[in-house]
Each structure stands twice: as structure tokens, then as C-alpha cells.
Amino acid sequence: MTTAITLLLGHLLGDFPLQTNKIFKLKTQSNFGLALHVAIHLAVTALLIHRPLSHWPLLLVLGLAHFTTDWVKLNFPSKNQAAGFVGDQFVHFITILLLSIWVPDLPAILPTWIMIPAIVLAFIPAIMIFFWVWATQIQNSSLKDDSMCITWASVSLLPISQRIGLIIMLIIALAGSSTMLM
Image 1 (cartoon, rainbow, N blue to C red):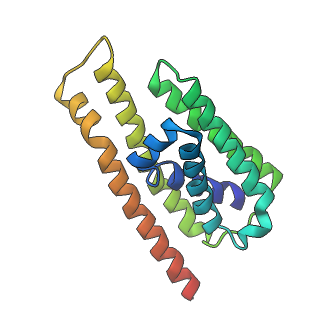
Image 2: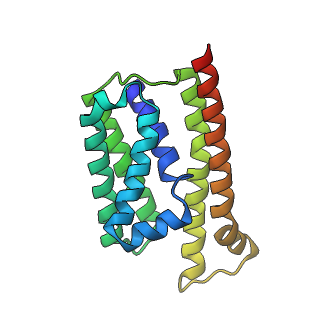
Image 3: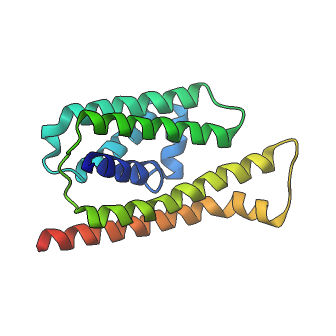
């Protein structure tokens, strides 16, 4: 169970607050940008694991799976961006589930009582990004909706979710450092 929790937290942090606009743009322009995104994702995950180098096979498979999933999404985009977002996240979560079956007890640096609330908090930016994708899709569609709510969501949700994500990462870092001092 610790594997699923650790990999999920690493995914939520690496795929949302740490995927800045600049990283996203690089990711869409080249395989180097995509590899950089995956490297950041793996670095965050590795920081959550005791002795991460001893778990290099798991990290390698996680990185290859993440790269492949994102490469397919970028090279074969869905016409419905919101559905593409959900499909992409579903594949990432299935990967985490399968890796958790392969290595069920990955030793995490944070106790479960910190990681579970951190995951709940980390879902906030993920949900906000989904609504941003959806609002942007509606605004750019032939059924263009210029309501204030859709316009606000398409303009504001991305930067708000990134700020919230960075605050959540700071909270996790502080909680992690305080537990290491105990």
C-alpha cells in the first residue's frame, strides 16, 4: 500500500504544480521537453522514497510508462481535450496500480498519516486543471460560451492551481522535514 500512496503523491506533484507553463510548452515541442517533464516527475517521486537508487527498476519502469503515456497523448491528441485529460490520468493511475502490485511495500520517507492528507490536498490543483481544460475547450469550441464563469475559469484556474500546488508542496516539505527531525 505504501507504494501506491508514494507513487500517487509523486504523480500528483510532478504532473500538476511542477508542470509549469514553460515545462508544458517544452513538452509539447520536443521529446527533450517531454523527457525533462518525466525527469522532474521521477525526481519528485525519488525524493519520497527511502534509498531511491535501490529501487531504480521501479523508477525506470515508472519513467518509461509516463513518457510513453504522455508521448501518445501529445502525438495522437483527442478532439475532446477534457476526455483526453481524463484518459491520460486514468492510464497514469493504472500504471501506479500495476507498479504497486509489483512492488507493494516501497519504503516512503513520509509517514502515511502525512501522505494521505497530502494526496487529498494535491488533488485540488489536479481538479482545477481539469476544469481549466474543460473551460478552455468550451471557450474555443464552435459552441463558444462567453459566460463570465467560463471566461474566468479559462483564464484564472491554471495560475491559481499552480500557486495552490506550490503551497501544498511547501507544506509537504515542511511536514517531511519535521518528521525527519523527530
